[in-house]
Amino acid sequence: MKSALLAMVAALVAAGLPSGAMAGDVRPKAVVELFTSQGCYSCPPADAALEKLAQEDDVLALAFHVDYWNYLGWADTLSSHENTERQYGYAATLRRSNVYTPQAVVNGRIETVGSRLSEIKTQTSALAANGEGLSVPVTADMKDGKISIAVGPGNGNADIVVAYFKRRQDVRIERGENAGKTISYWNSVVKLSTVGMWDGQATTVKLPMSVLEGKDYDGCAILLQTYNERGEPGAILGATSIVYEDS
Image (cartoon, rainbow, N blue to C red; front, top):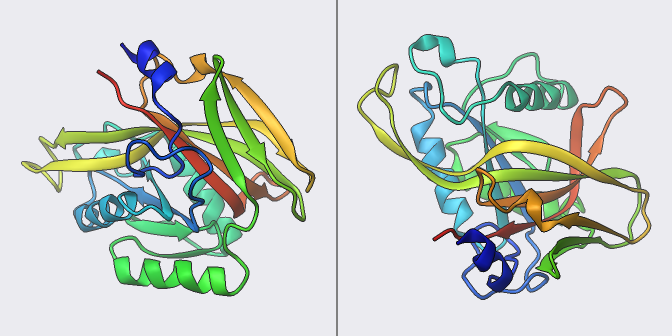
């Protein structure tokens, strides 16, 4: 049962870390967000690229399925309007006049076509070299019936955001541009929740284990992210994640 596993399985620091890695062992150097859709013909190569990123220890890879292609004949089973709003928020922050799929956003700071894996990796390295990597330490662990999120000191103000995700979903697409394909989708975000604020001082936020137990997702990413006065997402300053397995 999931409740028993939660008591036994350690928190993993990046979605894709091998079993047995303890929270705090490795800090991801980048967060890659893929905006994708099951109804988008050009998205499967980007979904495959995200799967590769999800297996890397130093990348936190998340998929945000948007809903604006649902009218094409297939409603994306993982899509939400909240995900679409997040992408439009990035468009405003990054000064883009439109949105598209597949789009990858790295550390909330720069975007590219989501299928360009080598370019995404180049961007993660360039951001780190320019001081725009994940500079604020964020760790999380599960014990005593609670999830404890610790954020270290740094500069600025940011929200502590939890993104709940499905680890892997194999979806058979019956209609639309990808009809007949079965595609594996990794780390698909199904819910976002702001759980705290950070003002540059070290802080700890504790959540009940029930936010994960028995829910329709397999783990969560914790993002320390800036937002502007209009609530549009910006730079991600730190991140970690918790992943667990069901029986």
